[in-house]
Amino acid sequence: MLLASGLATGGYWLWQRLPAFQLSKVDVLEQVEVRGTFNAVTEEQIKEILLPYLHAGFFSADIRAMRFALLEHPWVIRASINRRWPKGVVVEVSEAQPLAVWGRDRLLVASGALLPRPVQMQVGNLPELAGDEELVGQIMSQYQALASLLTTRDMEVKRLSFDDLSGWHLELVSGIELKLGHDALLERVNRFLSLSRGLLAPYLQKVAGVDTRYGNAVAVQWKSEQE
Image (cartoon, rainbow, N blue to C red):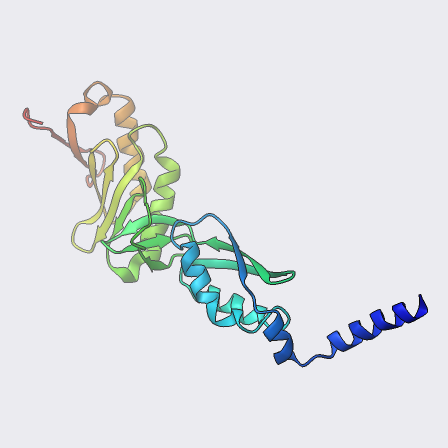
């Protein structure tokens, strides 16, 4: 028994002291389990990013470098990697969450960044935001304020845009378009909401647009009979 124990201990000692390149030959990583909910990034893309690091082997693989490589992907905001004996790693990835569509090929995310829109990504009913890219932070802030205000059915934001000439322009899910001017945005929207619950309530389906850029009044544009 003592001899067997000594051999076992000696074998472990030798294993611990094998050069890293020899261990790599024995322990090349072959199994990559990817966890996460994927919309912007695919599991195949994750594995492709990690591929150059897998040949280092179980003990020598640079987990820190693998994580940083994943975080270089614009849509990956968090990543963790853990070794799984004997020849694998478990990868967990979190994506940025899109808030709105910006133009044809980009999406606005919660951090305020504009990211390229992945071909395979489904955007569902995301609102559309538009304006000077230098004002993206201001436009995002105004959208978030409006989104918390416009919560009833058909009153959600469909599109919000800003330009220096006409100011803010808001299109609701119902199809009604609001001209809001350059300032007092929430006050003007609240004025419309009060009218929509009162004087305009019976006629909302006939309203095409409302111009709120007047002091204490609004101008209502009605739909044509063909609509």
